[in-house]
Image (cartoon, rainbow, N blue to C red; front, top):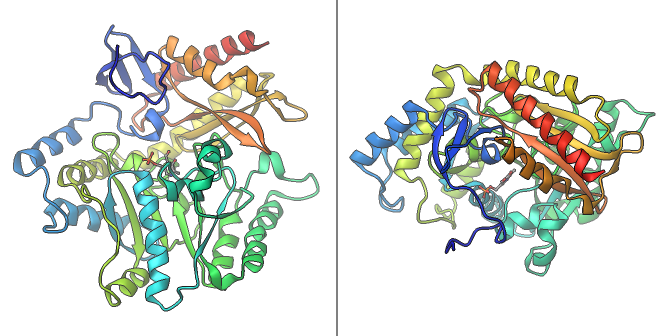
Length: 443
Ligand code: PLP
């Protein structure tokens, strides 16, 4: 009997005992190809020598020093490196231990910025439906996943949610994808006008939606329009790149693709590549200066902020990206992965859409390709797919999102950046076999 409170209380999980490149190995010796990097985390695979060496060196020298008393050389180096690589003037990095912590920090910094500026009436956030920003209460409140929010709704701050940019479902036949993007972005302006623009702190969105929509990039021009609207009304733009950032989409920051800059960006997952828990919030000179020359103290923090060992691990991760030219590789190899998925699945009766960018690819399953009707909840397609894939030695990330209150089934793929071509073929073979198996089981 396990005394670990596992999240999936009723499932007996295999014990992972070893990592070997893109594979995880369980106690029986069975190998699982990690096609989702866990949850888009393990971008360097599970046995990167450079990261392991950097962690050992840091622990030998100093594992941890409280950030209220000391900075460390590794924190300074990581801050300098990240901000030098970030678009715009994201000149400051605030280090925490994960994605939800980074989002909480972003929400509180955005609020404190306006308090410091003498605009305390700004108290509201606008976010999007079908988004995920984390499971802590603030992050859950801005998130737009009905299932995750439902039982905690009475505990959440009131946040306005507008439509996501979801061309597969919402683009009309009489509009181009650009026109669609402008139309849906303009919902932000309407929401701001309804709220009273000077009561709003920030708009938060994932540049490429991950955990609630099976990977959903916005159409070209959407985020440019969002940026324009935020600027027009003096509202901050927070981009949550916890899942899609750190090279995953083929650029270090996902929003580089959109050609915009943000006021606050959150990152996590790929930043530590799974070797240490870490997250970060990056912000601009202007926001930092408002706090620094105001109260001089950001009223927020955690015990393990800027943990020295995590800093060393992440520095080694970023060095590996550079030395092994991995981010550019993700762009080109990601296109091949998508092409291969499309080739194998284009005629599958339950595959509605294959989409994504880089090594961040998603498949949306439907009951009817013509009407795009989602698969019924009772099929539990996502849970079956997870089980079948694990049996076939494949880790992928199936999920049930919500589409207009109905279940939508997706699978998210986020393989390690080092995935070789033969491993890619194995991934696609095993995934297609698992999808076929579950499709027969369901119908
Ligand atoms: N933001 C996004 C976009 C995420 O995808 C996630 C996790 O999946 C989070 C925030 C929360 O991160 P964590 O699980 O590390 O708290």
